[in-house]
Length: 253
Image 1 (tube, rainbow, N blue to C red):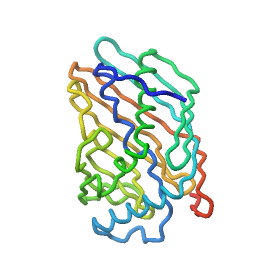
Image 2 (spheres, helix red, strand yellow):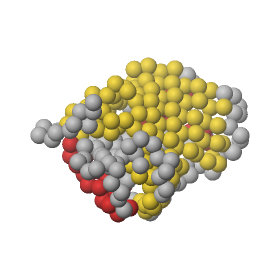
Image 3 (cartoon, rainbow, N blue to C red):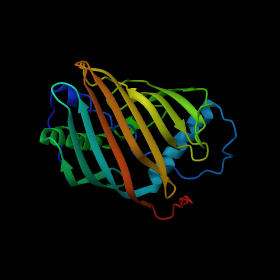
């Protein structure tokens, strides 16, 4: 298991405080609703909230592999680090990490990647679990134009945090019309983690595994005031998912 690292004042590290804290367990069961039926904003949000409760109850366990890659370009030099991690989750809030391999500067591995794992574990603790969910308790929603929406995710919502914290974001989400799961996020942190950072762009995509929607890739690009740029990419694969006994989740074809 990995323990949480101490804080580091470096601006390169500060930008990485929350980039994996957008919902990492966006999962959903199938719905019988017509996927092309137009819905109001309140209907979409209500369905999202209902499915959130269903999937929290249904998701019993999963294992997966993650590949963390960090590329920094700028002062004083360009740097790259990579770490492969096996993740195990057990309901309701137990998450374990086993490091399979790592390469690159030791400080980036110890004070960036391992710190991210500790911060993620913090986000699912009982005191924080409800605060990271995409619900009306945490966000204000607006229904945006969806002519550019892709595939079966036609509902595009603008999201603004009611109280900006390190666990939340502001931007847009794409919502699946059948499962009412979030399938894409384009956003920025609700709270800038450092004065050294000019802007951070967050891009999350999700895929459906055994009836559940889970992260596929997270990418966060941050511009540093010293004309540097840091790109963190997290790729997810090799999912093994288990639903709670008695709760049927349709396997994707």
